[in-house]
Image (cartoon, rainbow, N blue to C red; front, top):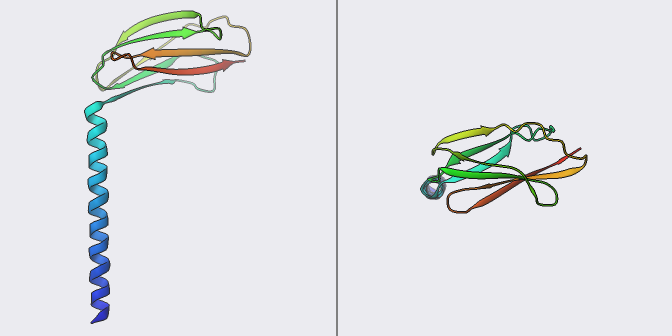
Length: 122
């Protein structure tokens, strides 16, 4: 009799735990998809190239980008239209920069949200 009670209690506990975790995961996913997100990353993070990709999973469609030198001066800039669910690779021609210089790529979305990535070129 007591073995059946323990099995039933453990089964109920496991069922409640799975239900709570499923509910929480569903709530988190809904928030992410409703608000959307976008990201920027280098195509070759360890190499010396500055080619990067903007991945868009948000409602924003217009993105502007700047390549900044270590002192904050813009070397290159541009803008891209990227639909929701799309990604776009931006290829930059090789630039002459002195060794050990930090180069920053600053990307802005529709709602003035900014994201930066940087590399130290050797």
